[in-house]
Each structure stands twice: as C-alpha cells, then as structure tokens.
Amino acid sequence: DVKVTQSSRYLVKRTGEKVFLECVQDMDHENMFWYRQDPGLGLRLIYFSYDVKMKEKGDIPEGYSVSREKKERFSLILESASTNQTSMYLCASSPMDILWEPQHFGDGTRLSIL
Amino acid sequence: AQTVTQSQPEMSVQEAETVTLSCTYDTSESDYYLFWYKQPPSRQMILVIRQEAYKQQNATENRFSVNFQKAAKSFSLKISDSQLGDAAMYFCAYRSLSVSGYALNFGKGTSLLVTP
Image 1 (cartoon, each protein chain N blue to C red):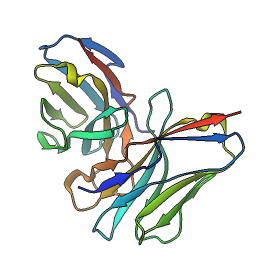
Image 2: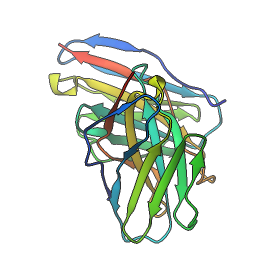
Image 3: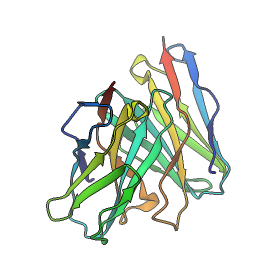
C-alpha cells in the first residue's frame, strides 16, 4: 500500500513564525501536492511538484512556498504565519504516467496560528 | 480551471437505505477522470470509486456505483444498503489530462449522516 506520511497531526504556531509542514511518500511517485481544506470550501491546491526541484503554483499559493530536494519529500513552508492560515493541510502523491491511479493522501495536519 | 459543484452540503440516510450524492462539473475537454473520495472523522481521504470519461459503462465498487452522464457533465454517487460506517464527507474530484501534474479539482463536499 502507498504510504503518505505527514510529520505532524496537530501543530500550533504563533503569528509571524516560519512554519514547515513535511510530507514523505514511499512509492516513488513523481507528483506531490499540497492542499488546504476549509469547511465549506473543499480542498484547494496550494502547490504541486512533478519532479525534484520542480514546482508549480496551484490556486492559492500566496503566503506559501514549497521545497522538493528529494523525490520522496515535499515540504510546505509558511514564510510568516498569519491567523488566516489556520486550516487543515493535506499532502498527496501520485505517479506521473498512470493517469488511472488516484492521488494518495496523508492524514492531514491541523495547523492553528495564534 | 474546471469547476466541480456538489449542490448538497448535507445529506441524511437511514441505515440499509439508498442515497445518491450529486456532482456536476464544467469542462470543455473530452477525456478526463472523475473520482469520489470519502473522508471520515479520522481525516484520511479514501478513494471510493473512479470513472474514465471515455468509458460509457458506469463504474461499480460493491455497494457504491456512479451514474455518469457525460453530455450532462454529471457524476453522481449512489450508496446502496447504507451502513453507519458510510458516515463521512464525500468529495467529487475532476482530473484534467491537459495540465501538468494532473492535479485534482475538488467540489466543496457533501456531509453524509447515517441514522440507525
């Protein structure tokens, strides 16, 4: 089974802090994604990566950056956390060339910015 | 970007009954994939069922089936013989084949309550 692991299930940080959310997958997938989930808004794509050191903006990239130095690891960075970034963050991965294959998700990180 | 609409924020069904969750999408593409995901309180996103647009036959997975109407751009999920464990948020998702990474566009979700 594909395993996508997010480093923290719950995280509390303060306004202005630099926050790192880590995600690791064990299936050698090329594609990795970060989504933000808010009640009534569904999942919205922040950033994705289709290869090491490659990244593309999603629908809501403002206030976020990402890093992918190794194929299995995709980090989401909040450069200066703000209260409106309090949310659930979901990481996902999928193979590049198997379009039938769904995205596999981690358990999510519930982030609170105080 | 393609828009996915789930018009039912909440639905309720009695155990052993059947419920249908609706999903419509907006696209000009002829080939794409559609997915239904389930998210129980544990938060894990679980794939329920998937459909390739070029296949006319509706997908079925045990008690879960879809009614895929390509011309109407509709992709509803039917849950038969509902069980308490089916209670969850359900998300419909669209995968375009024309964008890099093949990211998913999600609907806003439908919260399904299953009553004994």
